[in-house]
Length: 311
Ligand SMILES: NC(=O)c1ccc[n+]([C@@H]2O[C@H](COP(=O)([O-])OP(=O)(O)OC[C@H]3O[C@@H](n4cnc5c(N)ncnc54)[C@H](OP(=O)(O)O)[C@@H]3O)[C@@H](O)[C@H]2O)c1
Image 1 (tube, protein in one colour):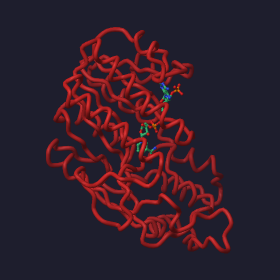
Image 2 (cartoon, helix red, strand yellow; image 1 turned 45 degrees about the horizontal axis):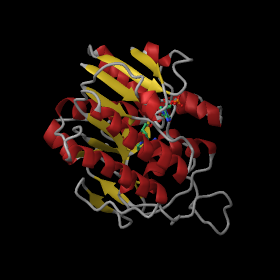
Image 3 (cartoon, helix red, strand yellow; image 1 turned 135 degrees about the vertical axis):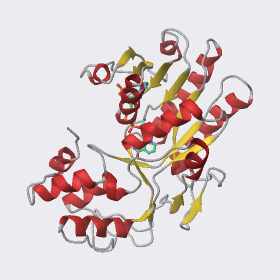
């Protein structure tokens, strides 16, 4: 198989490593090329280019059995979302018209589900998020879905939950640095980076064109229970309750745009036989917790990240 990964960062590199080790020829597009050699180390051939520039895509050599879109807008706001996700989608669909592309697999986000009532959501649930960034992602999905429906290129969208793993884990990092606050009643949906890669591979190889798949682990967890688990596992204190009135810098419980839902992975499991290597946060955070417990009191914010970096 010949595969292009557009955006080779945290997810793209893990996917590329997985695909190249199973014999695929993998090319990866990035604006900065491969200065640190991480793409070469993962068996990915670097192609220099910017997804938001149509002329850059024309320089990508050859046809592809599959294209995975894993570029991220970085810390930018809604304008960056529009440029990278929506503009990038339009450019890719136009680019695909001119060559043989077997399928496009865009990495989407479960933030398209705007539900706030803690209900279960599936791929068929409403996607009407309050957040402007979420709405751009809904629009981006529509570009890909229309390309599929109109026969331009088969597309299979993967809506990914909050990613953690070596070097990543937002709430874990806040817990370690004492910035975490309990937000009772709020559900978290997470997935380990390596399971994102295996989910993308399953969709790429066996997914049904036009279909959408949620990529999330087996067990949504209440934010407060996750913090309790971290406290009990590490012997550190349970973080205080979030209280916007007396805790500057803490996160308000009902921040505008905060969604609250439980995302189901049943379709990925039932239809594609996908099984996460880390079914819950307990398995997924075991290494990071062991590292933390092994060095009590000696973990700085950067150390917390370092503790999660796999050998
Ligand atoms: N983090 C989460 O919890 C989460 C949850 C759900 C979905 N997602 C989605 O998962 C995907 C992958 O995220 P990630 O964490 O792997 O991102 P990441 O680590 O920030 O990597 C993003 C990659 O995209 C490249 N890139 C950015 N803009 C580009 C452009 N205009 N043209 C070409 N390449 C570009 C970057 O390299 P250069 O800077 O060199 O171009 C980098 O290699 C994203 O679509 C993200 O929205 C993430």
